[in-house]
Length: 329
Image 1 (cartoon, one colour):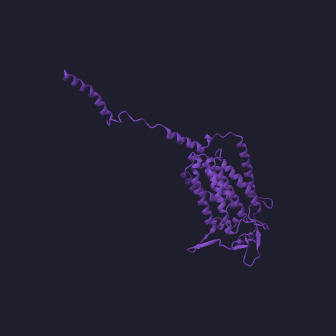
Image 2 (tube, helix red, strand yellow):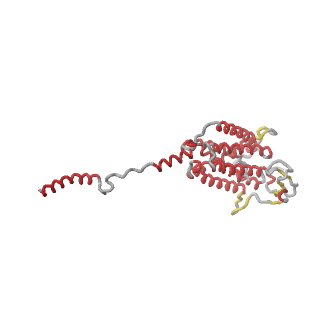
Image 3 (cartoon, helix red, strand yellow):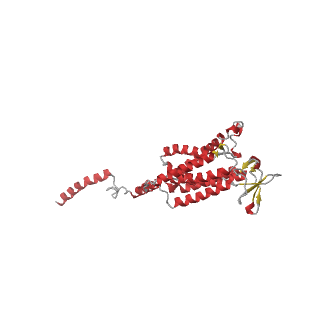
């Protein structure tokens, strides 16, 4: 059975006492169908946005920087995700052009959004005169959190599951009048993997272990790539690069993980003075500004006289003294 046939399937978990649920993939408001997939993605985005804005100061950025970035990043990221997915499914979409813009039915690829986002950031950070590494660090922490939440949209759509298995944590899918199949709940694997990565990166960065701008993002890409490279091998809906050999996302994930590992090793052998970290530079500049001596008050401030009045008073003083001297004579 294909994933499109699974949209109405009931879901069961043998390891939970064969617990069975059958949530609808959408709900209706005023006659308009709203898919849980979109609602969950929106919740993931909002959660990540507020997390990033809350952590911005830890990376030398401001909340305004984050909100301005996201204002541009969101639509461009969605477009990138969709373009990436459509390009690797062009055999189908070239015959169904009207379905290219049907995002509510799913069909996005995260790597497309990441590529589009990085291209935007290269331009935006240069214009704002912000270090790309610092921006990527805070974005990486928020992105892995969003991915952890967003994967549950796949659960509601009964998609992004894996091959059939009898593993203890298998998930059962049962269409009306059809036999139950048990599959790898790969959406759950990835969600838990991202949750573990988020917890690690949050604690690690909070404890001040970040040595240079961009380090957190490098670790994020490495972590995500390792998990995605493994999980993609279990899925049934992946975009194939070489059919039966390797999938597109597998190649991208493994390649980026290797590249990031090499960068981490190289960077670990280089000195990284704390004062070069952008957040430390911002704090040092703020401290220097607050410690700068205030302008000394002018000598005329206590008299309440203007400069001209003070000059006139000084000129009048000798004359008054002469007059007084003459009177004494």
